[in-house]
Length: 75
Image (cartoon, rainbow, N blue to C red; front, side, top):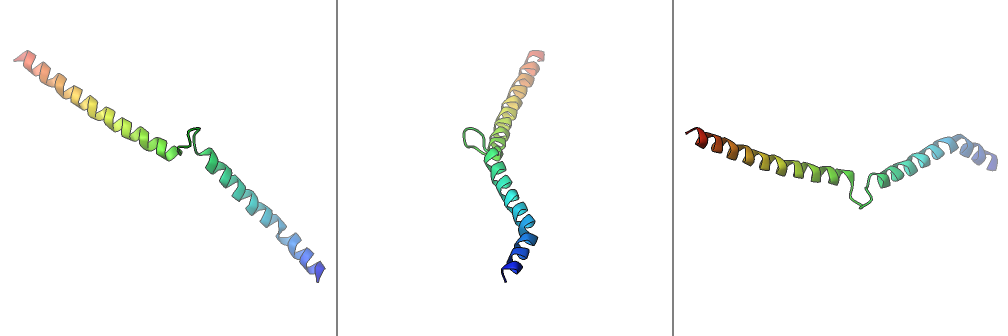
């Protein structure tokens, strides 16, 4: 009976070790995906997109103001 269990464990041991290694690596990568401040990379990208949108809005306002100023100078 014990020899059967030993042969069973020896047969499944590589798969069990592989699964454990993958789980440990996944958890390690999950911890690495957070920056030093504890904010995830996705949150950082969302903040960057929000800042880019604000910058685009500001640049569009500046461009409109410059166009209006140029039109008044020509008139």
